[in-house]
Length: 114
Length: 111
Image (tube, rainbow over all chains, first blue to last red; front, side, top):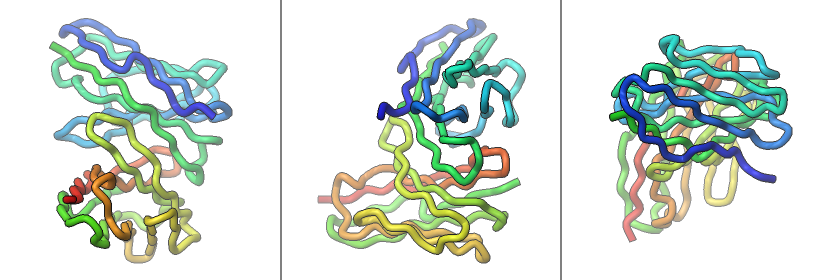
């Protein structure tokens, strides 16, 4: 079974631009979560989608948004990029979306904002 | 809000040693606890998932224990190898499947 895939793997953007990241979960997984990882803040939860609905949202500004499609693939969008948005963005999928189930992470997208 | 702490922040051991990594959490009402490994610049690899009803889980040279009442989990690595060098993270979910992560323990196994 293929693992969680994320595209692109690396991105370089300029301040003020916007970016869209993509995540394809493991086949059959309906929950997709997004995390931001930085050296200073560690891993921080962005949001979680289950059956195309955002169920949970972390403490990030409205510039960070996401969506999930009917095939469970998810996209994350960041508008008006700031230098502080440079980070590794990780998505994770789980089988049903309850907290009893194991989360599987993708390799991440490394975003650099200049 | 759940807070997760990992001690030590960094650990360096000679090859072959057994070692213990610690994870503590403030809210003991957890559903499960998951241990991950992260290699530099890479994603997270799931190592072990312990359900709240379990006391421990084993996979190969890894053994994780969970004590909900005291808010603690340990990851025991037996006969460490250089390939075990990585950052180890523990995480606990809230009811909404949001995981709270510790800051990790950076492990270096010296050949």
